[in-house]
Amino acid sequence: MNLLKHKYYQEESVFKPENLLREAKRQKGKTDCKVPAVCFLDPDGDLAAYLLKTNQALFNECWACYHSRMYNFKVDDVEIGIIPCIVGSSYAVLVAEQLFVSGCKLLISVTSAGIIKQPNTNKRFVLITSSIRDEGTSYHYLPPEKPALVNQELLETLSEEVEDSRCPYFNGDSWTTDAPYRETPSSILAMQERNITCVEMEAAGLYALAEVKLYNIICFAHLTNSMAQIEGDFEKGDEFGSIDTLNLISYIMKFQFEKVLV
Image (cartoon, rainbow, N blue to C red; front, top):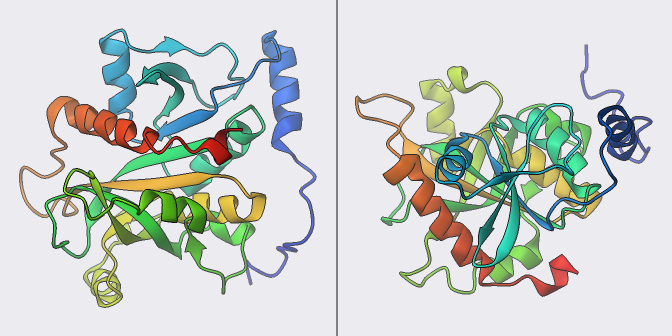
């Protein structure tokens, strides 16, 4: 069976996120309020756990999603909505679709990633500029021949100071998979030959959504492991990487994104 046969990319979907949320709000008795303009996907859930533990986050009453919880926190006086444990392209895109019809204007995702090709830098955050589409979700949005790319205007903005040693990230390409336990030696070698920096599970789907719906989405990878090939892998830093991630968010927010957040 050809799974790409009946995609019809130019047709609108019958099932729409705004209609689902309309019913969710009705059932849950929620008022029609908006989520923060800046939202954050926290696939590992470590940052959300740290913010709750330190009383820096509050439950968001506006978020009506059936499948997740949102919390609000602030970085440099910018209110941000954070949703933990959004793992994989299909879940990330499902939630992202609902975020952008709920008031989100800029979505940032920071996910743990396995190192495919060791970078020539000590920086451990990668601004994902493009991603290999080795998952299923992106193919519901973009034809197979289309690459999954970060929005070029956002890339230009974020790359202005990427060579500065104070910038916590560098630019790189990722491999998005939906089957992490099928990262075979041959597939890893193939990605190394294509100069892929890391492997993760969300970027390709999120970037495909961003292109089709003209949404502002930025995906970062936190290089934390070598696919558990050595003991002591998956170390993320203080508070499971939360302090470094907050510093990353603070750095990103200094760009302001005036055009995005109107």
